[in-house]
Structures are given as structure tokens and as C-alpha cells.
Length: 398
Image (tube, rainbow, N blue to C red; front, side, top):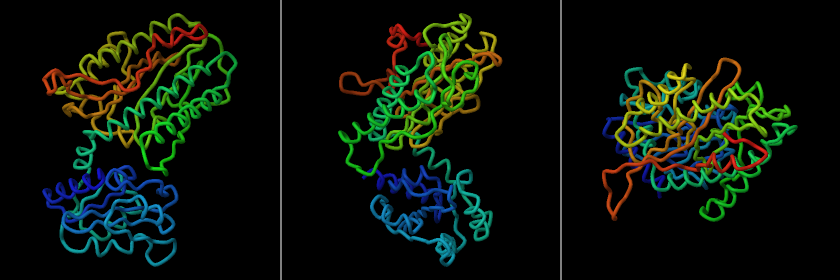
């Protein structure tokens, strides 16, 4: 199984780094290596810890209330359950795990503070090893199974975008658009789960508060859908970076629309800067290019138009919303086939207007004549053609 293969590779990497044990606490990393999900996270103060040894059986420490789920879903050697207020709770097994003088690998930026504080009391500082680079490098290149998830996530994102687009209108409250989007995404997810997957526990429900802004509030990039009623001629921004989450796989996908017509004609020119900045980024997006070079192409267009770039051009996606590499200055990661990247185009016009478009892409080497050749390309995931959207009479889609 894919989870066992990942675990075996992690063990080899730990052995090569002379690590005695790794403590994995990030929810997405635990899923990546074990298939365990839908347990209570740290919001309720209940940590789950995966202890991985290079040459011994691994151990999953998780709340007692989640035992049935863990036994059903987690591909691990051993499970140790702990209960609220009993003994030393999740801490019980850690002294034995961390005893000795060997190296202890942790995720410094992901480990919950309460867990880190206890681990610090057991382990000398010079024994710690940062396992982050090992895990992020493993997750950066997607497997065939992950790429299928990416393509299906793209289908979900397109279904949601179409539903949102068709609900936009003069006098329509933003939350009605969010409801239509959520319903469409859930239905499409359920359809794909039933046809292609045998995990009956995996929920098709879309979640995460819909990022949406209209009118003057369009300058707020993470504004949530509200009771505000949209008006004719206003711009509308829809972002699916949180809601495109199919079978735990995430993508980035954004669009800017107008209701009926563009009332402020200057916005169309500003919008074109966003479109052109994404096109410039895509013109250099291919294997062998440094991540920062994609951002540089995007930023150049925006700056030549007289604006500062508002944020990084893009990011790696997968089982987490933010993965390596990031398309930004300073990230010199070489793009490779198998990476999945969200690539944006954007512009901010003082406090009066902003536009953003975004899509997700797979970096790949194009097969020709049955073999791999040097001609590289990118594969667009879930592209919803702007020309197709613009064909509707009631809306001008940009």
C-alpha cells in the first residue's frame, strides 16, 4: 500500500540521517504516512503523536475516544491510546521512547507547544534533529495516486466555480453564492468518491468558510461570504484555496467576475494586469526552472504596470494548503516533474480595487512516441475557460 511505502522510505531516510526516532505531530504528515484522519486535533488539547524508528515498530499515540477510527484507518505497527485525566495521558509512553543519547527528529514549526515543552524536558538540545526537510522533500513530488487526487480535486473546483458563477446576480446575498458552491462541491465529490474510491468514511462535504468579496470589500483578499447583497456592475472575487479539498488533497483556484457589466471601466485595465502577470509566470513554469524565477516573471509584469506585487506568485499544494516549493523570491528549489503548484496573477490598486486569477498545474515531462523526451510542459488542473464564462449574457467574467 502507498502508506506502507511512504513509511518504509521515511525509515530509510531516518537511518541515513542517523536518527533514532522521529516524532511526527503535524496532522497532514500523520495522514501522509499512515492514512489516519478525522481524529480530534489540538483545538481540543488532545495531541496525536506518531513515533517512527528506523529499525523498530512504529507507534501511534492517540486519544482513547479515537481508538476505533485508528484501528480501522491507521497503517501502523502499534497503537497506544490515552484518556483524559488518566495517568500521564499522552505523555506516558514518551520517556521510554526518548530514553538514551540518540538523535530525536521533530518538526519544530509544526509540533504543538504543549508537546514540545514536554519533549524539551526529556531531551537535551544537542540531540534534536529537524526532520522537516526530509518530509517536505518526500511530499514535494506527487505519486500517481496523488496526481489522480489532484485531477479529481480540480473537477470539484470547477463544479464549485460554475455553481458560484451561475448564482451571482444583482440583489443576491453573498451567502447564497457560498451555499450553492458548497452544495455543488459536495455533490461532485460524492460522485467521484463513489466511482473511483472504496473509502466509505471519506466525507464528500466541502468545508472551510467561503472566501468571497464584492463591491468595495473586494480589496479584502480573505473576506468571507456575508449577508451583503451584490449590486449590478460590481466586481466579485471567489477563492477556492480552502474549499478545493477533495480526499484531503488541496488545490488553488481563484476568479474575478463582474455583475452584469463593468461599471468602472478602469477596473478592466487593472484586471488585465492580473491576467498578464499569471501568463508571464506560466511562460517560465517548467522543469529545471527555479521557483523564484516564476515569481520574478509574475512580479515584473505587475511592477512594470506601476504596482507592487501583493504576495507570492504561488505555492506547492497537496495534502496541505502550503507545501514546498513556494513561488517567491528566495526559494531556489528546482521545479521537477510531479510537483503540483498553484499559480496566481494579481494586482492591488490602492484601497479601491484588486483582481486575482489563479489555477493549479502539474509539472510534467511530456511523453512522445512511448518514451520520455526532453520537451517539458505543464498540465493545467481544472481550468475553467474565461472565454466560456464570458459567453453568459448576465455576467462579464474576468
